[in-house]
Length: 96
Image 1 (cartoon, rainbow, N blue to C red):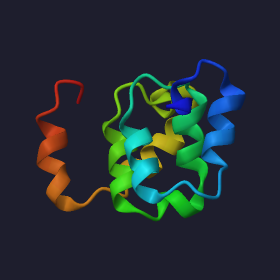
Image 2 (cartoon, rainbow, N blue to C red; image 1 turned 90 degrees about the horizontal axis):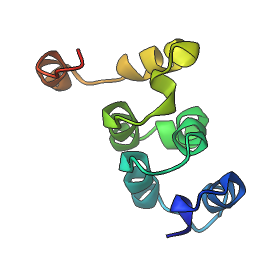
Image 3 (cartoon, one colour; image 1 turned 180 degrees about the horizontal axis):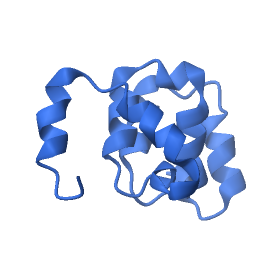
Image 4 (spheres, rainbow, N blue to C red; image 1 turned 90 degrees about the vertical axis):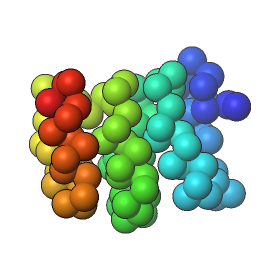
């Protein structure tokens, strides 16, 4: 898949394609082997973050660049989107 290409321009072009679906974005958000820019672009897109499944996939992604200290407000904003049913799952997480 082109999204895994090490060249960031290729990944950005894939995300900007009008033929990409929400299901594909969700799968990309779950991938740990994509460029740092890809989850960041997904997280900043209002159209994609309207989907709970995509936001949930981004928060569960261990390689998500938004977990850096520089972008803590973005990650915190995503965590606030979580449903109450997800909270016990977060409390059992070893990284919590």
